[in-house]
Image (cartoon, rainbow, N blue to C red):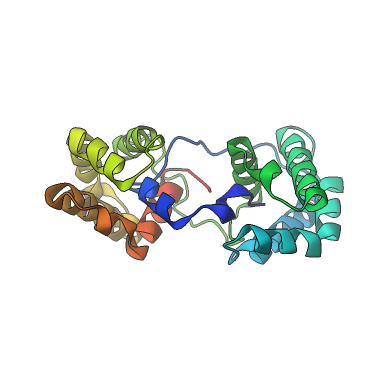
Amino acid sequence: MRTRSVLVVASVVFLLVLGASACSSNKPSAAPAADKATFCAINTRLDKAGADVSSEAGFLRVLKAHKTDLRNLDNDAPAGKIGTETHTLVAAADAAVASGNVNSLNEPTLDTAGADIDTYCGTDGNGNRLPAYFAAGKGSSLCSANDAIDQGTQTATSATDILTFLAGHQSLITQFSAGITSLPASVKGDAQTLVSAAQSAVASNNATALGSTAVSNASATMDLYCGVNH
């Protein structure tokens, strides 16, 4: 179940450069098959309902239209960490509906909870099945560079800040680039897209290349390869 990610404004796409490996995937013990199937079917339905939403008002409409799904998701939640995260998410969603605003959902911990639930269900934040290469590169040198770049850009508030970081840490771009040759064909092109965009941005001192749809999509692919599910 996605939360804050549907409300991210376009400028934050710059923070996606070379992915975001600060989070880790969680694979808790599965609930009984029937229970998990029911729970995950609801979660996927909610994800798909919010997949194309880009405004707070739109997201509130989705929550209001899926009150029954939210209740059933809460009731069918498995025991343990995933269950606890589900109860927290549903409570925040209920608060958003009751108050008419999404302030209760604007917490990074809820993003993490939503990603954990999606990973448990084997889907991404849009309700699509996770690719076969999900987490295949976790712990690799390339993904370590990916992680470091993400950590260095998380506090950036502008494209200029991103450029400053990249220009001062080109060794990380080099480390990331060095791992491309060993990547599976399904993600190799995306990795190269990110490197080319970063190098172009630094060389031209212009962040335009970082805000393209191609870079955003490539970043999402590399996140999944590194075990990060948004």
